[in-house]
Length: 241
Image (cartoon, rainbow, N blue to C red; front, side):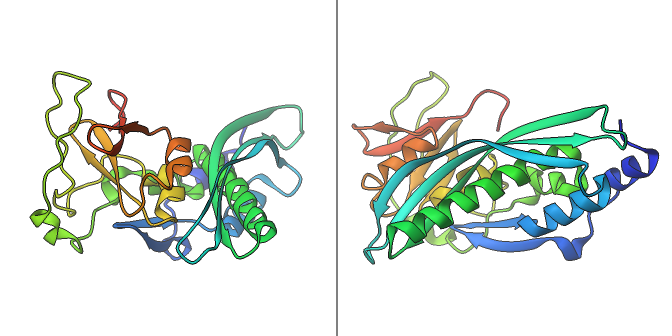
């Protein structure tokens, strides 16, 4: 399918000057920009030898923040198709992306959220082709919690509803300098509206202000509401952490 030269390029080390970093919540994210992914695909596969198709694009939530701006969250599913040089063989990859649009007008928020969701889906689908598309950036050992909120140890412990005998309490005051136990890219839409995701004892728990008012965005990421403890939670599938 791929030439020897293409395989060598795909498996080569990612150049550090292509990597960008930004902070969301308490997480420092390393990522490749959308235009970089497109240019890399053209360079490796050849212009016209690959394409993408948007199979799903839908709004999953609509809210207003404290500044009375519209906050929209979109989900996109994109299929990427890569051909060989003779166009008689191809490989397809598909993945989901999320985007958040924050703007004064509904139209601008829709535009921003939908574009971001499509770009995110393209990047996530392309990463399956290897290091040159940022797959190594999803290595959880690279994602380290900062120490900025280590003083949260003074906060009270939340007694969390058990759904498994192995789970006791989930606390929101654990040290933030431990390694991440989940893929924070999946919850980018939550970080953008001021929420955080904490891992403890097999669960992910949402923290932040107005967590119930932001329920649509939280539910869109698969979290459930526990009325007893007033917490949003999600149990990690075995082996996923």
